[in-house]
Image (tube, rainbow, N blue to C red; front, side):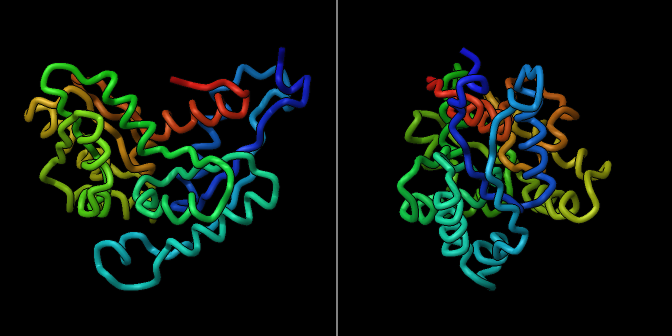
Length: 240
């Protein structure tokens, strides 16, 4: 049965604005994943586009500014009250505050980092080493290390984390330039040289340029994984 015909879609709330283009990119991926004959076939969303969420970089790396956790928790409660039946967030680094979100609501949180690690663990072979292209904050907080280790995989980061962080800031401010693409490609090349089986594209700004990345190993885009699970949740289908 077509869910749109039966009114059976489940509505997903998006904690967005980190950054705005990355949130729009997720919405674009959701549109592309639906074989729609009309408007009613698309996935219903409630989007809190809040670019004023306190800087994750300032709080986690520079140890300045305001804790983003309470703001994200408030956004989660607002989306639940508005009718969201699950929540999702297209910012990897902000998943450091997932516990604040989960504690604030009674609906599921589609955790992009855990879902992506599960996909990477299924694909990783041999050394079971997974490379991660992410923000320096994600590396410094152990966001992916702990989940990957629990999944039986080693977590490998490239050395050019400062270049990657500059690229993230650049993409947020002026869009992807050649230097940003080169930094992402350089990080991927380092990971391949270290023998990783799989690369996680684990920053939503990098997801916006993922199609320009060339790699000889499997590349998993965390935003793509999240989009797949949002579509499945909305349709009432459970992904393994």
